[in-house]
Image (tube, rainbow, N blue to C red):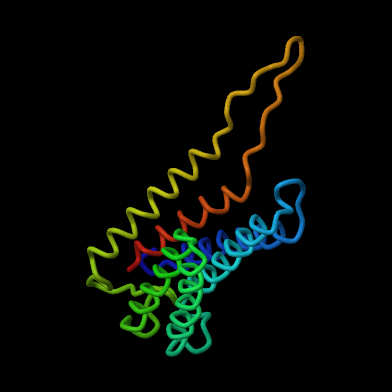
Length: 187
């Protein structure tokens, strides 16, 4: 990112698309996708992606950058506490990572980089914590990406093989982990 508004807008587009897809899927679906637990996960993913899109907005677009960090802290802190109570560890880690980035944002120079990230000469956060979060989201992105690879299809006798479609909610999770990794690179 390093202050690039183009990278910020690309991250906004990625997160907004993931959010729109997850929120639409939480309203409609077939089979297992109609289960309340699945729909709740889709809503959670969609809202997290929407928050990520808002946090990735370039600083020039944010109307009042002085208080926006505290709005993110309050919103993602609440989501993180809910995720902990609901025993959703990945959502809790993601929410608390967003709180961490928002807190780092409060120390950022006004107007530098993205609305959600400190972009300046020195390290903006705690290097060990940033490194652990980078490692977590890198591993999550790779692991969820691997789960998207379809299993080899077995052709029925005399017929063409059916190719299974990977679950698109997993694709959203992969995209969001890549987005979180990218956002953490700017801390």
